[in-house]
Length: 241
Image (cartoon, rainbow, N blue to C red):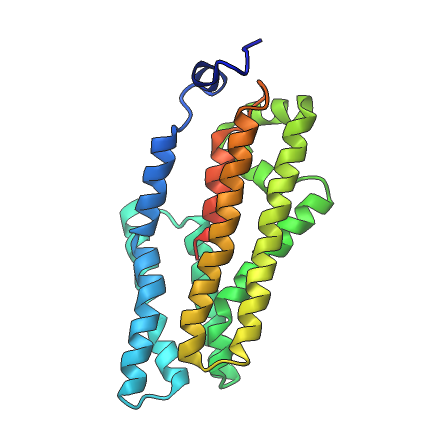
């Protein structure tokens, strides 16, 4: 058995071909520069301010702003030739938000469209822990193969870690969605967009930082390590909107 004190060699031996720290850092940087983030976050904010300054009412201004995240999704789809889970959820949020906003003639419904999807994801995470099959286990199995099942069956620490990770991210999603929905009813749309974005960054940024600290502790705790993909996937699932 490999000694925990020989951490560089142990990491490579336990996970040959796995992503390095620089790989994960590069992936995060690419995600932050992606059209989905740039157009999905900045586009609606800027367009809303411009349109309302020109006299456009809040509801149509918010509706027009959905064109930017939609364009980001299309660009990513053309580049990758596939619609990933995050973009699929963003597309669902746009459709639900537009339909609800127009049917109920409510700008607030458009403001909470992302929160509806986030809350749904969070509840799914929490429910998966309750039934004993954390969603992050399913995601990791798909990405890393059947070896994950062997680790899940053999290592109680791994099972506890993965349940905790899924539980915390589920709770973070539900908390963030609840706070944003509450803010939508007490703040003006323009203010809520800014405050809500800052809130999302704070909640998911803190959760991602906690995840990385826990993974670092896990790496030094013993030979049965958590696959690196779990941390990367969890951060992307909770942090990207």
